[in-house]
Length: 290
Length: 314
Image (cartoon, rainbow over all chains, first blue to last red; front, side, top):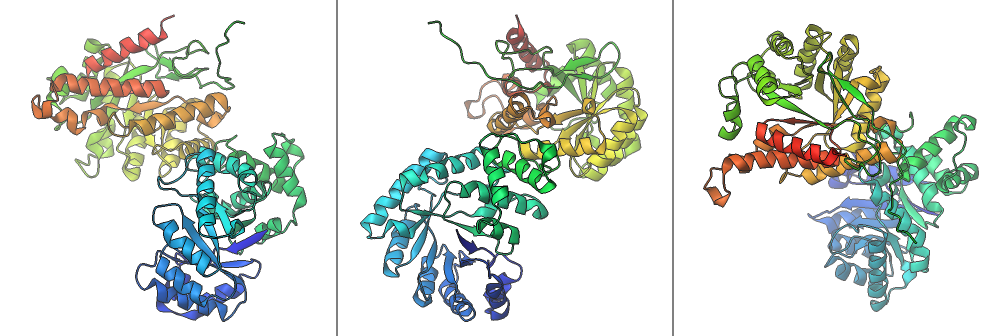
């Protein structure tokens, strides 16, 4: 599985100021520290003011200390192109959505720079309401990419994962869609903003949701995920080093009800977490304690 | 082949709870099916209506809301008695508006004395509603709990920011707390878990889901309450099986539409309009699973009582 590190982000307390002040130290430190991921996401936000200079600078700054692939993350198309121009190797454009205008700006960049793209399933009417609407958006992507001469293998579909504490039916339909994606678009790849699942959850508890959710999505052949690069346990899971836990999670997804008393504390946490992500139990911040 | 009507598979039950004490105590909850789904399960106790009384003279009430209480709005005890004697209130809710730190900021002792007077003036179950200011409610409700020991109050709102101290007072003096959360099912469940961890027994917890009235997002309240009932009844979520109290009258009667004059924008008779906004809002919330409605206008209450009677008739 391909992992994309999410930590080099303008929202961060250290990275944000460093990006704005063009201070390479914290940025290069962060890039060097993201050793266990395959891509480093460079998230400069909407970057409305001089976004092109910022993106060019951060790409060069990061490439000065690492040879890892880069995911360029901004909604500003001018900044995106500035980054692509200086990016060595095949870049990942994060992201292109189906909102009017976005696709028209994004696809030519993918083609021109032979990049890959995250195909964000956000349509003209906003967030898709269920699995079927996600399917329709994927078909749109395939058609439009084909017209633009972009191979389907360069599209990494992001079905949009929402927090478990917001609207559980959206989480369920995201999973339902992922179970169908291989049939709808066998050549497309997939990715997901994994940490979204735990948005709003107390910080110390977020990893349980992220890890369990990843195991659940891996079952559907998830190709890649945008993750916390410093969650070692999560990396182990992604690298297939936790087969027993993965098997347990998959059994619970299938409705098996293991005897909780026979489980270790760690296993019990995974089981409880599967049940809130599937919606079998309603989420609350104390989900691990009840 | 006979047609088989699809039926919801229920696995849980809403807790049956006694509110108040003595002869006039009422029981709510006990539902084993969605609201008024008598063809699928039981609703052993009809929803109840608590009539609203303020602890201060209301200044901005629409004339239609004020008229039925003429002469008593400056005396909470007389007001409460009027609700019971003249309008047949089976519960009363005393709103402690005067304690609002951004308003009159009346002290805890004075507020508690008023609560005691009202508690002594009527024998129906009494709800005491604070201002949702954590520090002030803690101070006021703790004292209220103490001076009204034995009266079996229902008091709140109790929120994540003040549940510990008010919850402790409720345990100590045995009153029911209203666990209040901002229209969010996950937070509601969490607060109930926290109250349980604190040691508040299940028979001392009811939920306030936070409500609004028609035209002001009631759909969202409906949906959250509906999901609470689904979790409690079909997913055996025992942290969401508490009865629901809806503080709706304040919301209905503060809307712009209720305050418009008869001829404004062709909105029709203002009195009828206010009554209907309140009655229809309460009806919607009853359909969503409300067990106790806090209401104001006797005619709105009459309409809702009739609706409850019709829907629960066997």
